[in-house]
Image (cartoon, rainbow over all chains, first blue to last red; front, top):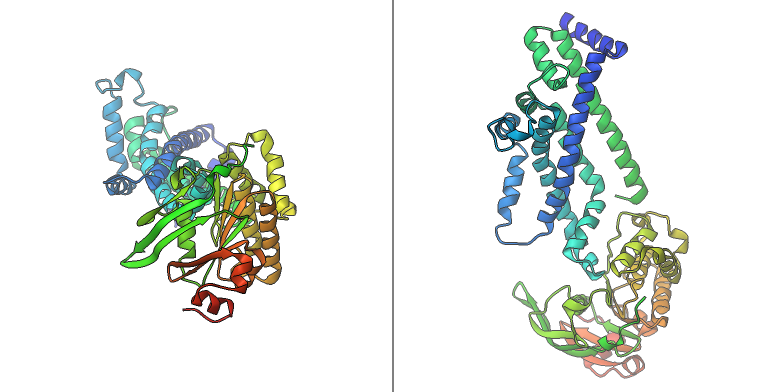
Length: 235
Length: 242
């Protein structure tokens, strides 16, 4: 009880006082995860849609891989990105390791298969309904791709939100490639890990509450927008 | 807007057959379609009308025989032959944007789309619905939007599958008026229906089908007065064909 109440009080204090360190951590978390989701989405939407519309032998293999990669372990992704970006690695010369850029890369890789797999399923279901009508209006398969993505926009929002949830909540990848450097690569999840290990459970829980609050807030806004759109244009 | 392509007519069907799942659904259909403003494929449900229409549009490949539109194969029709299914899919956007999408596919430049869309919507009397979400429309309105959408591409022919099935008389009248408006612009109509009265109202020529076969093809006036086949005579007399 005591610990828990204190955590809430501390979280309240963190929010009320707008501690600049905390704000920095929260801001960096949002910046990294939103950028990662943006990059991941820009690749995953066309990729998922292309896989949904393409017909080639062995098509089941990339789909299975994509579906399996929805559950890609963050630490493993972190490790792989670490190896690529470390001084001796193939991309070492860019000096990205232990920078927010590295964290964006790792999270983008994490969310990409998730968003792409959900996109593939959504677009494939839509295509079953739309394909003949669009073809009769003269649309090639390539031309259907952007149209179906737009038609699926309300369902796809959920996939993108799932990607954001995965990015903002993961700690395994960012702690490896970011290094949890104070003021440089410290984000909410890595800060929570650190504070917990230091025994500052109140602070850790406070950060956790902020993290959850932000996630809920962003989802609420996205769902409200989606709902408005659905109401306007029909399900 | 490019000139309408009259070299497509007539569509020549040569011994078209279609089988699926071990069932012969269409057999030996040889015909010339689109010689008159409105051709009606008439017959009871299950006659194979929809199947034949989809084959003519190139949405299905016949398992036998061939369909050609002039020198064009069904894969080369582009936007020259439109097709409106019985339950057309409305894009999740406004009525106007649905037409704009079709116009973009037809290669109409952006600055001309607004006017073209207004014209198409006016032709089917949906001008007041331009801003409404297309999925908010009723069944009859959807059908008219689908006709406007396809017609906005200025096709030489428009294929319509049961355009007024399951709709009330008022909706049916609106749809038939839309079809007549399209016909009057020179787009040839090929529509299928099981509704004898609709055929009577619209048909310049009737293609009568039953059980996957073409039983007769005659001008509308002749068909309803003196049907040639026994099945057609029974159908015209109002008997139930199974």
